[in-house]
Length: 249
Length: 253
View 1: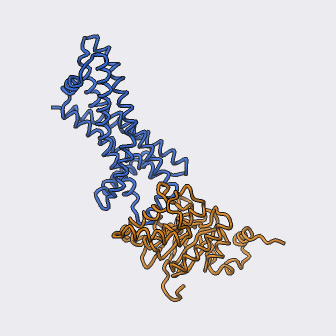
View 2: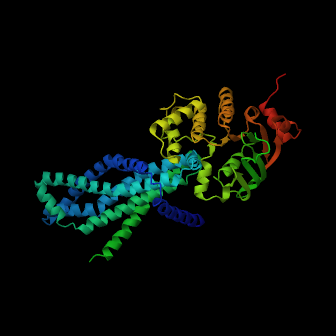
């Protein structure tokens, strides 16, 4: 219980420090762009693959249920709603928690145990600002962008399946799909992804920055970053959906 | 060494404990301009803790550390950063940034701490620092491609690029073969002669201590047991000190 309380205290201090450091100079824009590339571009293949497959599989598995009611024409709307509201933000966040979270946790953990972070400090470079702020900002910016991309490839996968089975045209598929989606849905999903991205980056940095006990500690930091980030993503998903439901006009 | 001038590092009554383990128990030490002071001691005796306290990587429980006239542990972050730019720290395992090549490792602290330098000036400073450590051809190598001795040299070059007034060496010869250790000892002397730096050299290698130190301080049981020239420190029958000497300099019949 004591270690949990200490963890919450240290985590909160880390969070507060992020906001203090985020809005003061220097901003390390070059490092931020590099990290956006690392998080965004290097996750594209994985997001493409999983998004596309999810689109196809979800369409195939939804078809029999809708066919029982003679409502296969609703497939585009069902898939679009599911992807935009929930699947794309969650899939993207979970993939990023696994790929980016472990990568950041291991990188910073390794830098910690090999004294590279201390080397920055003694060179009068603020390692928190250079390492934590840039990486967390990068995940906060890139996870929503990846989420939108995931929606796109998911819909592409779904369309291919619908086209092959129901011979639907692309305009008809898009018109039907987006007829049930509102700006509020898209906005809520982007907002969710911003929170997911922020949490993934901050948790991975926190675990890496506080790694100890040599190479074993690096492994532990990477593992803890992924597990905690995924857990927090699900908690946030639940809370945000609840808030959205409450505030629905 | 400048006789009569105030010390560039002055440590008084320094205490540091980690939980129940009292590592430093009242350390006093002065280091003067262009002087090399070697701190000897057993593994885990708090030698590295001492120099980490000098650059405020750790906070003392009691005592004061004055570096270049400033009370290190009373400084605000900006003042501390300004002071750290004047102090070079060579880590035991070099602590090179392993995602950067040699050139980038040197360029990084320079770019972060100086503004208005042209690309040509940066390149020249990197070249000068690499030449100073005898590795002028290593620009594009990654840290993983370097030998232990080369890593130590690049680590020292990275600190020299900011032209420090004080150098802190943490176990500069640890893990190196005798020939490479000798080269590093020579390099420490060259750095002092070329850049007029004052240095604290943390080691348990007596060859390094004798080759580089103007004075030797023996840190045992959390206190500076003896301070003086190499011969003065080892002119004793204290088994804790003679044990060091016997292990390092085995006399052959």
